[in-house]
Image 1 (tube, rainbow, N blue to C red):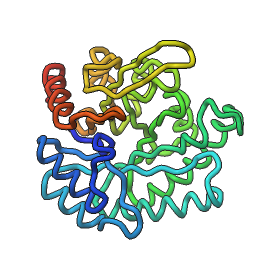
Image 2 (spheres, rainbow, N blue to C red):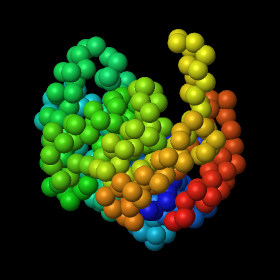
Image 3 (cartoon, one colour):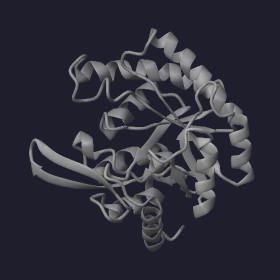
Image 4 (cartoon, one colour):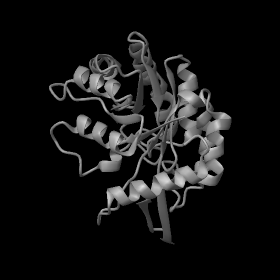
Length: 275
């Protein structure tokens, strides 16, 4: 597996200008060989230059891209056009894998317009267009359950599309907000996954209307890494080629990125023979 960094680790700290190059510097600082980060916006950083710098440093760049799978602006045709523009930038940057996810703020398994069963019927139609657009450019997509749907629901959508360009991505802490056990989600998603994010959170249950989830260094939270980490080698289709990126989410009152990263990497060294 290829250990890397996921850009949300530095949410709120990434400089507005040159953010991708800045993140590549953080990869170098910690000896990480992959970076999960958004594809640049149109008119933003030069994707080709970022890609060149990543290759020079031996860093694999995995892109992020998201859209609305349920009610895409301008319909499926508009979705395809936006995907084409984003994926062209991915190709320019030498990106081979893009993690894609929906607009969970607009639609998720708890929203009612449209009902969940209708959402799950519509989503494959949107993803089919996205997969075909990616395939035209030689890209591999990883569909991420992103605090919106459960793992088996997104795997079913991927299977309904049935396109080799569309596989899955997995985040170890994303199952919690959709009332799913991460180990169960891992067993369902990992056999189809091309990218993994390692994230931990602490859950503080108090009352049914007052449950708090805060980020934590890896191994210090509520994710059962003792159960999940062995599943990476057991279930991933190609463990040696799969990126596993550390994704830290500091709480709103702050924290020390360097301290959390050091603690998380120590934990991984203790737990994983390949690191």
